[in-house]
Length: 348
Image (cartoon, rainbow, N blue to C red; front, side, top):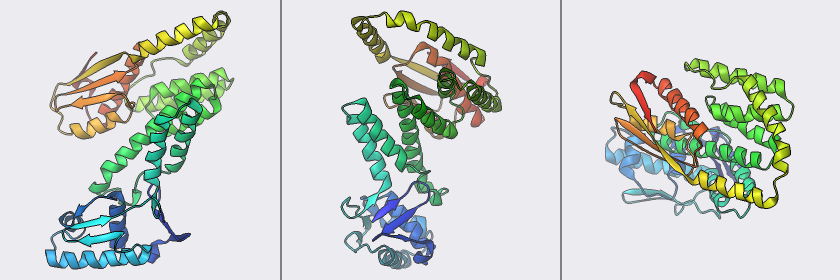
């Protein structure tokens, strides 16, 4: 059995897709999605009662749960050992031999990428992870509170996969592929000024200047929606490219030892971390949701701590020129949540 949770929920059993009409009960299909989200966990029946049979007498809720689990087993072919109700707990056992869930495979490939021995191998695993993610987690249960944390988690993981793929492919000089993932990233996060500049610079460097200008104007439009203006003019980006081209000749004169020395110095600089303190001039009641939104653009090694009066972000491998982008992105998140820039203070 194969379960797709990203994009449209789909169950494939014995080579056939289980269609909506096969369930005959919306409650059964919804409960099955809930069990998939909580696979391999012992779920107290009281939690299930409160979500699916709120306010019902416990005895009647138990009867309904038993009946609904029977429907799930009948539709999916799961056994009472795989989907069990014993005493006060309900349990769905997901064994990778008999049942696979796309979300598990997504996480597996990300873990493998972190252990990869080479950049090409790392890219390959990240591409496999990216290919699995077809859209938000359990979108059919979009408004259910129990699905939201997992959905946010996978969205953040996916954005990091896109960001990392773009960075690695850029370093490898595979610019067309890099652009593909940058565009996907920007479609999901249209206020990321830093990735816009990277994509625009690539387009300029490969001679697609008109496309670069169109992308710049698109970025400008999005920033205008949140009351911001681009840090750089398009002409500046073109000039930067020309200056870089002129500098290539002198760089080519460096021997291998000099180049390796430069790389080592760069690595040491990148290891330096810095803390950004974001002070709120008034108490933020929805700080947890704000932190989740800010965490979307953090990298694997970055850290975030917060209380109702301040947020602390520790960035690793940050460059001086990135600071302004980070401040602007945080401002963008705050503006979307109705918090004006007059109510905050940045301290590096």
